[in-house]
Amino acid sequence: MRAPRCDVWLVRGSLRGRRLLDAVLAPSVVAPGWELGRRCGVCGGTDHGRPVLPWPGAPSVSLSYTDGWGAVALAGGPVGVDVERRFGRSGLEALAEWVWTPAERVRARGVPDWSGRLYRDWTRKEAVLKAHGVGLSVPMSTFEGGRRLVRVPGFRPLAVFGLGRWSPPGVVAAVAVAPGVEVRVRVVSGPVTPRR
Image 1 (cartoon, rainbow, N blue to C red):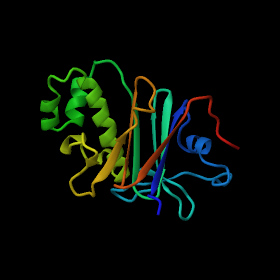
Image 2: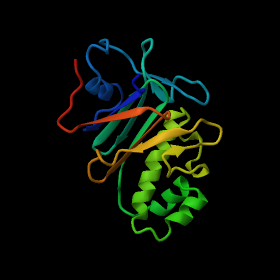
Image 3: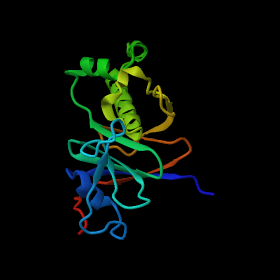
Image 4: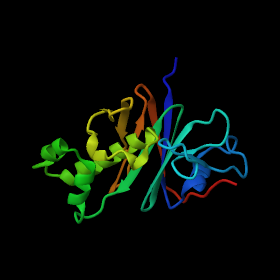
């Protein structure tokens, strides 16, 4: 029996939302004129929250964007993806306070590339929160994110995979899925346009 799978696309360009999904999904899967829905995992609202595909039996979807790159992840269960472009050191201390627990901040002291660790943990934690459907309503500084299995208080643990092997220079990405799910990554780096 095959393990459940998560498909991830790292896509160069500035496509967002439905247009990004149109660019990576097979035309046979997508009906013309479909609309991307939303559902908040905290309040159940449909005007915000995680993206939802509008057909019966559709996989879970997660989207992320940064300057010049987007990411799409599809899976049969919980899934979250995050992609961030690394920027200069200005503001990183404040970001570290927002992302890291006090213990993570202590461990990062003296690490030569602590900013690289910060971006790694940021993308991992944000991917986990997206997979749980709660976005940033749970502070990242309340749970640790540096291990393969990440536990957020009150939620099931999720497996997190860094996508550094596939990410372009200066871009950090991660995907979170249920334990035991196989992750398959594709990079789309040419000019991308949505299918008609």
